Length: 60
Image (cartoon, rainbow, N blue to C red; front, side, top):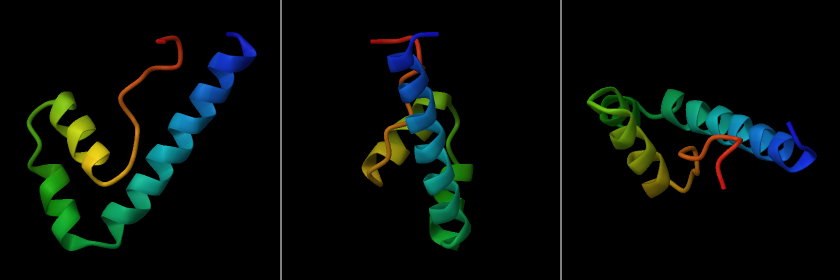
């Protein structure tokens, strides 16, 4: 894993942690996220809320 990939990895973890905090503080957002049917649905919903969780650390 390159340093750049490691930084992407850490960034995604941070985004996911922030997303979890948001979802846990909002019953409405919890309901929306748990109604997602696919990974893509979750990624798009998170993106609407300002989080970038779609890219994997090795992807450009």
